[in-house]
Length: 146
Image 1 (spheres, one colour):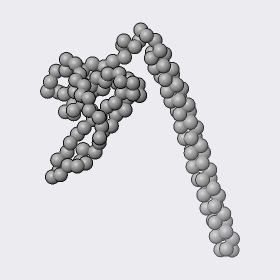
Image 2 (image 1 turned 60 degrees about the vertical axis):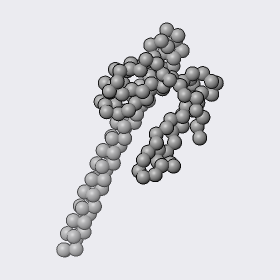
Image 3 (image 1 turned 90 degrees about the horizontal axis):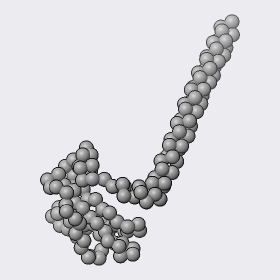
């Protein structure tokens, strides 16, 4: 008789375990459905923003409005206390930033930035610092990257 009770208890435990697994599977399925719906919404938002950016880029009236100001950049909390360079360059410009420790000794670092325009168009570089006002204009140096 005891064996039957144990077998019945074992069958009950097995049934409870199966119900628990079904509940977890249903919860995971529900979570997956919600995540897929959120992904669809985000994809739609991204597509809309890409279309808007494309339309703005192709509209000559919008081209004059595509800029940020010195104060816009300085007001960003993540940029406070940082040295920031703003670069206005034509499409296809190559930017190289060598390792600042390369060739240096004694813990010294040398920071360099090399910019090269594919078609020789000018590149404007602005240093944005909390200590100084906006620079009047950029200065270009003709130096080839190493």
